[in-house]
Length: 405
Image 1 (cartoon, rainbow, N blue to C red):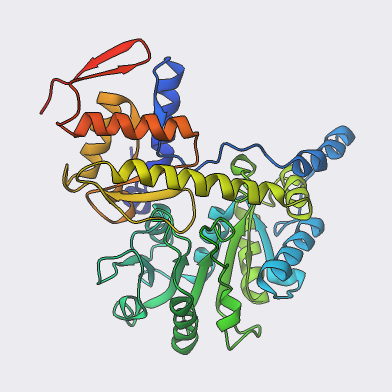
Image 2: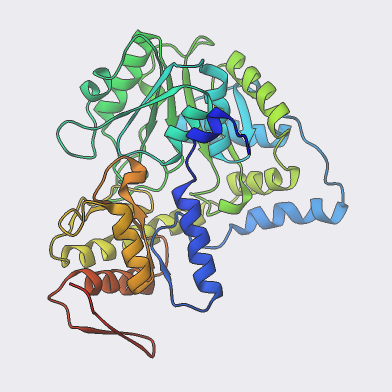
């Protein structure tokens, strides 16, 4: 069978593949613990549910404009004004089928073949593949100081003749690192001076810990005219625990949004009217669910860090936000894919290999599940890897005996 050259360069999403594997194991009745997911277990805000009931009752579920409904755009404008102190017009906004589509359509709108996109490493697994889908070249920038916190020079050193854009995801998936205010200010200024697009993937910007304050990229922009190349991405999936609703958005200059809407119109048409209605309900409704989720995640993070700190040979940097920590397991294996497979096989704990995020020897562990899953999952991992652990482990009524070294 003949497939395209682009298709041959694209890898399967590691996170989606692991989600599928976990679902298969659970369907078989296996006691799998999923520490690889990025899906909060809290329920969807009641305002999102109530907002859809009237529309469902009307049985009038129709097409929407390619860039989103008027009501959805108004909600995004309100959100941008409240959380970014920036008043934009409807022509500056596009609603998409999740923040992922908003990023993808933005890249399709700005990239030519062989142009380059820079992003700090570790990075979200989809960035390189999305860039490659545009026949462009992904350029990871690993912080030279060995931390998860990039400096401007880490980005600057990667900039060349073909550089077109920079993507910043803070707080970061997979590390949970929230980049400093100084770094964000420098990147915004640098991209303006170099005439580069700057895509701010802010999908986790309200899920931050330890009394940190949200960092607003617009505060550091000198050019907020319609010539600005600043693109801000957000959505309802993470902060409102509405992962299955697939509603995200982008805020950018009017001409770029127009082009993005043209692409999206041919790609998928407008997002579902029903799901946009739910997103509007969440954005305009009572916000206590976001704070409740944030507090739960912060408590879960503290618990996971405590368990990992008692795990000899594992190094972990305390996350500043998100659902994830990115733990260094190099003591046990330099091959994170083999290590993740070993943990699934031996103790049925799902993790995500660090190589998928651009750093080998690490595992991404999620703490958005239950306290029990965090505790039992890390304890199983420790038993499987730490040879000083007892030789036997019980998972329910099932006894495991370690027969490896």
